[in-house]
Image (cartoon, rainbow, N blue to C red; front, side, top):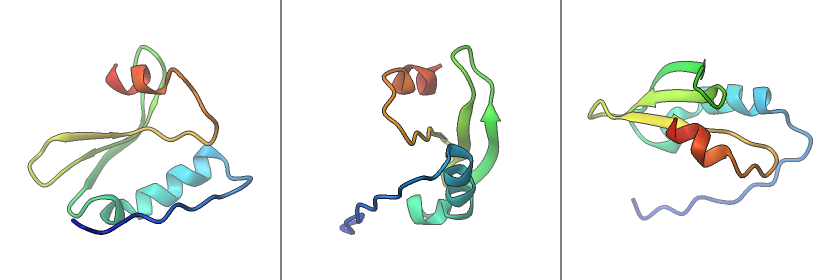
Length: 77
């Protein structure tokens, strides 16, 4: 676990492009993540990526290319 994630600034990328990248890179986020679905509808709007970890726990990956105060509430829903 002691690995440090490198901050990367990407300009002019859409959330859809970022979502596509994340879907292809789940193992880089956490080993053993399995994609369940994308754009899962909730009361506050769709979750970008829904996955499961090695133990079957749900993992919500909410992507934003701009700051958004509702992001946490959207993920909790």
